[in-house]
Length: 266
Image (cartoon, rainbow, N blue to C red; front, side, top):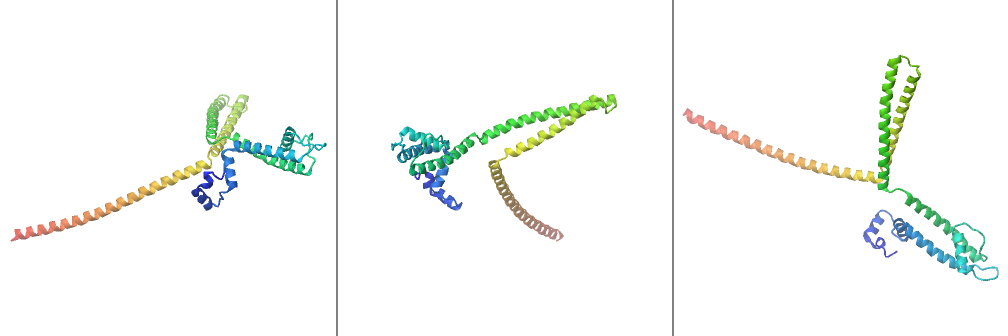
């Protein structure tokens, strides 16, 4: 495990130091459990079964001072590790009882790890969540359109019955009015579900991605503004030069006209 690139990479250790994360044995164990949970737990349980069975066989004796067989020691380990405790085989020596207690504690810890790994495997990943949310969104959209159509239908029906009977106490009118109100309530509930679904669709990764894209766009806009400012400054310089040239040209033209007038006057 210490030959892993995570432990030998200097840049990773530097990043860990800057973020106050110790790249040590426990960090490597966590990374391996994160990447290969089933493989790590299977190897851990097999190694623990071998060591625990050997320890129970070495420390436990039968009433006739004979050692447990390999199958009995493995059975005792499995029963103790799974915290079932049938009681058909029990350690008699203090050493065997100590080993059995340690095996039971490790079994509880391993059971918690197995449950955590199974729960993680049963969870939907990011893309599965997107597909599931898309299906839910499509169903809610269909229900919303159906309820909107019911609202229009029952509104027309209420208007027609009111115009026809001119009474607000008829049974058909009251039924149509109740159906209209139920459709409005259902539409509001569907809209609330759609808003909740949109909130659940946005996770931390999407927020980070949106933040990055916003930062990139802001940087591009800043570059464009800087470029435009440079262009405007250059245009101002050119306008100033043109103004100076025009003034010089006007002065030259005035001088030329004055000279011509002087010659004509002579």
